Image (cartoon, rainbow, N blue to C red; front, top):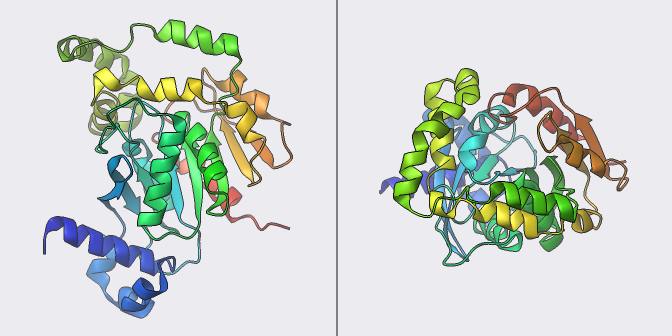
Length: 311
């Protein structure tokens, strides 16, 4: 059995353990068997794999409890540039009682890059493909920055498949703010790989705040993912600025929790308060690294929202 086949077998077993696979797969490995297989249950807790989608292969990480809990699976959508590795600590926190997945957007992390710049509609479509490929009937969604727009668009595309939503920031930009952000980002994407390489040392030095929070090893992994494909790193920002988040979020019926930490987008995110009765906002004292450096603090807030009974 190949490494890829082994990883896929373990992931399917993790899905069955959560009781959320198609009946034929769930019947092939009963909960009793999973609970008695001690070594395999440990392996179920942390892994990664690939799935085919409309833009090529999508890479995803996952963590799960290896037992039946009845909790809805959670899909995490990252900020751009970056990848699902930004949720690594959060996956460990949330994976104690539910299958938790963090996927890399097309063109980011280890996912294939499309031949043309992606839109938020594209990102959501790729995640919709992943949901289907994994046999998930319904998921909760967490989105961070660009991922917040993707989460809202995914709920628009697949309303029956999305249960609850958590957003790290809300992209409630005015047209002038979008123009200002674009002007500020002008020239931030290097035109050549040589130019990108020359910029790495000073960028790494500016990453010191994450190094102090996460340690050099974890911070380097996060830094690398943000700079893996530097000449295309602007695709995520461009997609977010072109998406009408403010109009679309008003059409979403699912319960939405918005996490608003102290960061540059905080006053922009605050505008979502009162936009619709299904939206709750929590202001947070944290700054950067919400799902990496503050995963243990954020997980209970997210869990409370996702598990709340609907009257």
